[in-house]
Image (cartoon, rainbow over all chains, first blue to last red; front, side, top):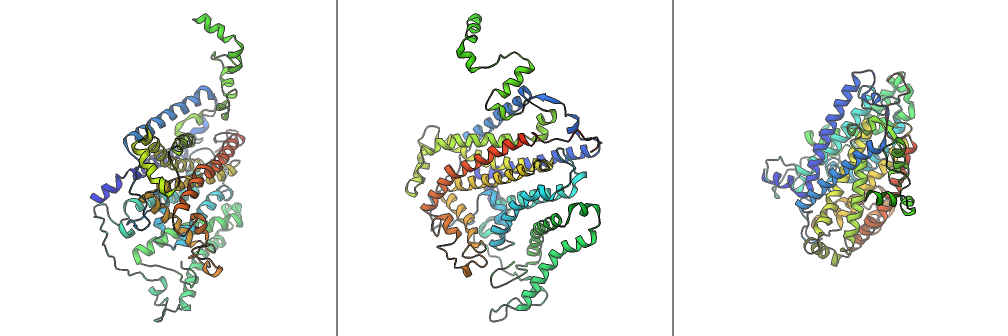
Length: 294
Length: 259
């Protein structure tokens, strides 16, 4: 408990608590707005569509908001000092070494994927995928008001992606990951000497195909097995298209938009799947090749 | 006194500064917005729901406010900080212990930066939930995503500048990812096959060395104080301009009968 309190009250970690409370608060607020809008014929926002003068109606709100933010920021800055630790020393590595808090979700993904995926491919796909959203989501409804009913898939996917795969992983990476990036419950002491037996196996080994032989040479059958598994995973998207391509939803979406959406969605969902594989079944890799592992 | 004020209001000096009277008329309210270079970012009139803080959460505006606060406190901090490994940490100690209002400036800069990262994320969250990226705002959503990334980069480059243990190890962990870049990193897929070594890959370019050292400090300093703020400012100009050109704050299309 002591380690947990110490880490939670670190000045640099206060913003995470702030993030946690605002995200929970805003999620609750928007869900209640969605429910209200979804039960009535026209959304609340459309009832307030008459025009008002910006001066003073909007400028007043901006002015008060600015003052409130400045007061909070100044009081926060008067009472809590920004951290300044020992001088930089390249020969003394702290344990655990952590990136700034907003990257801790990505650092947490390093447990489940190799750095080239967790640190390069996934961040790139997040950025590209976010920019692509308006072009692949051609649902005309739900523009300019809170609604769930009219865009279920979009809202659900974003909530899962933002709240679970981004914010929750940041919280996990900051508060639950101790020395050696091992998982510690809040009541556990952060023991630097903790030893955890590495019992990780590759997916193929569960099915009796060893990844490497006794001399450390890669087994070609394991590589084929891995490629088959990954291809099978992404063909879920193809199968779904073949089965549902005549529905009005997919007709309107079109093959190109559908392919991009399916690829991004399946890639996103591969993270929780790999987390379960790793945490519940100790599986390290699905595919091992001489150049990269997945 | 009142007479003097009235007389002053008739002078050429006063009239050259204030172009209209302050009587509470709709015309003056409109002029108040369009005659002011800062306020004319706004339209003159907006739909009532857009004033509602429950709709917008005010997060975009607060992000902009924090950017201004960070620019001002950042410039003040630059007076006391030298981006060289010999001086950086000493300057931080000096700033925190001897400079009048030094700790306040530094704390505001750091906490403001953390807050800005949060408000940017919340702004994006709100824009998604209200479907505000839908036509005609697709492009502006993309500009916003770039601004989100720039905010992360600004915060990350600033993280190194105190030159303490927290700074170099956080940046070491963060930039170690670049080793594994496919094709361009010396530990990434097909990197070694393309001749990538620790002293010529993308991480080496980023750090100016094989580990986080004095050249990295200078690179991150220039990026943090010059390059990234200018790029962010340009994207912000486009972002704000496009909000207006795309029809202002999003809202339901009231020309439609059904929803």
